[in-house]
Length: 547
Image 1 (tube, rainbow, N blue to C red):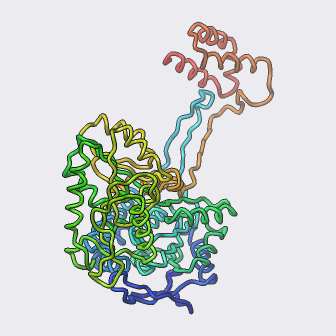
Image 2 (spheres, rainbow, N blue to C red):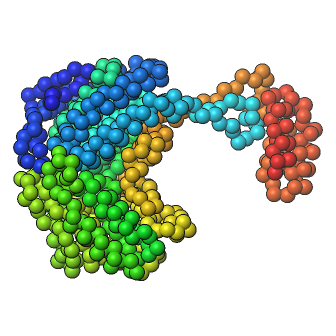
Image 3 (cartoon, rainbow, N blue to C red):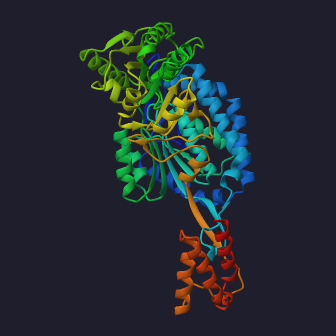
């Protein structure tokens, strides 16, 4: 794997580098070059210079590039999945399903819907005075997008953000996580091979100082950042200096509510996968479970039994369920939360200890009972293979506890009752709520992604995500032949009377008052005909009749 930067479609070597470590074996994978301020400047300038060309390029030409990228990703699917497994520690089945398959779906969605999602949307205006105008919302690119991506999903998160930014017409500077820089470079290789013009996508691995250099540069129009709350605040602080638009996804503490009427086996299996996939290192992982007391004992018993049966080992082995954690510091964070919970009376029913199946950062998946909201494990993001389960008295307590959190990314409800599911879904404080499933929506390019509270600001993915990285421009056309407008100068007593009667006609609650106003307007028809307002007056009448 080539560890050099990608700037203006060229591979760039530097005099600074880092060694990428395999979290499974702790062996060195590759040397990766790091950008200085100079290379960051070159990447920004290349993206800025490429923007006019990329903006003017037709949807048809861009569609060819996205389709070519899809073919290349399909051809290199195993290579991508194996790199994710080696660099990040994801089990190969997860890497193939979450990263590769979802990446192919993203390219398929935009290649087939590019013109549709960017198409202007006609808008008829509210005021009848403006009925003759032709109006539309247009969605235009902003310029350079800076994408700062995390290590927990090193391919699909930056890949999705990059492709959607390109689909919106923006050019991109991608700064991958320092823990998984090779996967970021793989994204650049695939899209450049597909035919992106020079400068449209630049990949610059760097230290924190250079990342802040990129964030602070006025060339950048939009920043898409995925990471921790503290770093997200720093990104927002730096971006504020230039009023740069930011989209922040800063994690979650996602609740799972299991009601007594839920399908027990389905709910247990759902908790197992959504809690432990990716070794729990997902902002959308189930991180706390609230089970109605009538089902709690059975749920905890089955969950514990199935957790013990999970197979931990080499992520390149297709039989492996649980791979290593990606970094030692994150493993230690999870251990500290478990220790604090134990000290406050929690019962770790299984797991929670380091495993020495291989030299890397392996932590046995844990199920924890007798927990409460005084413990960090129920309030702060854990980001590891831990499932704390709390028994609740009923649906109201479950809702109160689920909302008692600083995060609001996703939440799930598990029940056979459509009524209860709808009641909870409306009241849960989250960006996404799913019923009898969890976390799947991130992988579908038509869904949106993002949350509330400390989870961050803005949305990504799908047609609504494109709005966040676009200039939503309102364009109104007026080609009427009349040169006057009723509301233009000069003002007069007659115009005052027309406005007063139009106000009553359109907005008074009394039918008789509105009818009187309509009759009163009839004597002003000569004035209305002088301008552009006769047709608009007829619009008044039509609206009154429809009321």
